[in-house]
Image (cartoon, rainbow, N blue to C red; front, side, top):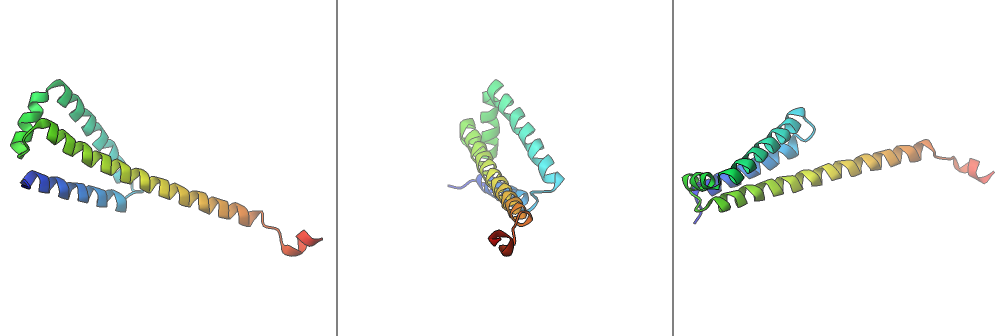
Amino acid sequence: MTTVFQIILLVAALVLVAYFLTNRRKAQAKAGVKIGFVVLAFAAVWAILRPDDLTVVANWLGVDRGTDLMLYGLVVAFVFTTLSTWVRFREQELRYARLARAVALQNAVKPEESLG
C-alpha cells in the first residue's frame, strides 16, 4: 500500500535529480548540494542521539518505523550521489577528450614535413 509520504518522497527524489542534472554548473546547484549535505549530517546526528524521535516523525509521515524512514532517506541520498558522480565523471571525460584533441592539433605535423 503506497502512502502519501512515499508518493511525496518519490516526487521529491525525481525533482531533485532533474534539478541537479539540468543546473549542474550553476552556483545555486553547488550551494544546494552543500546545504543538503549539512542537513543530512544534522539529521544523522539527531537520529543517532534520539532514535525514538525518528520513529515519532516516521509515524507522523505514515511510515511504520523510524528505521524505514531512514532507509528511504538513505536510498534517495545514494541515488542522488550516484547520479551526481556519474555526471561529474562524464563531464571530466569530455574535458580530457577536448584537451587531448587540442594538444593533438597543436602538435600536428604536416605530411610533407614528415617525409623529408
